[in-house]
Length: 316
Length: 226
Image (cartoon, rainbow over all chains, first blue to last red):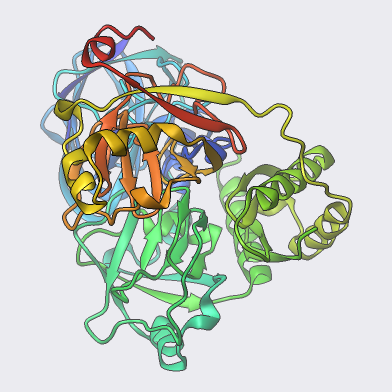
């Protein structure tokens, strides 16, 4: 059972919930950047949320299904076609051998997830199927999909047809179409080094996403001002996590994502909260983001609420 | 003993920051703290990541209670001791310093007012202790570079430095474990695999191990078997 990649798209990679436990070896966590959309896609085909999906970035692939497969797409809003006819996202698709599913125009957001009922038949590396693009391992031969690849699937029968509950996409992608996200953050270890005006700017500015952003980091810019520190701190390299907002000497913040370096030497002015990490995945060049300050307690209750909401909406 | 503070770093991590100069003694203590935390099997803990003067502990965000966990960790650390170095290993890394694999060796010699031969002799003379890993998969932060070999980084970093390249960047020496962009001065190359995904521990060395470079010929480099 397999899928043939007719056109790979710009960056289509195999991702699951990531590769914990190897940070001390310098190996970043990897995994689906938008875990919630990844979870929805898996639910639509009856998979557990830990199963690997194909993460699609802005320009999606065209895939030919060599046998009957049950498939679903969730996440960023794309126009899809099935054998050249329009086809919906956010619902279970029961495909026949020879069917071709194609990602057309991206309407909003940046990343979508393709789940196939069953498991993608690849070998886990360090406990995960996620692609580590930096070091070239995991996923499909350690790289993004290319035209002509064949992905083997251990297919499962799934006969139900599910639709993503409307309220869920509203909850999760509330502002996808505005091309602007508000993400919540807690203060980073060097937050207090920011000048008072820069503390204000951090929460008042709209930051536009630079085209140099990738799965390692989002590079942000404000046309209003740069962020400044009260003193130049000579930082010793320290561990960083997904969501760390770093401030390099340019004064333009960088947000570390799942493929980011495991250690860094720039001041950590903020930490995007776990509940909002997947929103960062849906930003692309020229979209904007702003930061809203919360406490760690608020961050955890936001995550608790969001996860509960998802789990109950996706319980049947 | 070292002073430290336990700080909530994010909604899923806390970071212990140690006071004092970076030293092997401090690294031994940080690893002792790491051991104490790991042995306690705290609720929701995923992993701990040691660095020069900090130690990060990552948790499943909905399975830990930050304030309570911080105070538990404070207690755990009060009995922390520096680890012994008895299980530290010495790794001999063969390096070919032939000009064809060392595009910046001549430049480093010029900058440091040494001959190429002297650079190689000094670089292979010292033992380099591993302080921490990070930056790239399997990258070792090494200490112990002879001050005579300190040499500022390149103004224009290379888009691709090949895995195995041995380099000097400022006051540090290191080995590129994977192909990556890089701004350090490349003075040689090892045929040895530095980052190996087939190994349970994919990096070649751990903190407190030591690295010694030994010079090999181009022929030995080309016929090297893993």
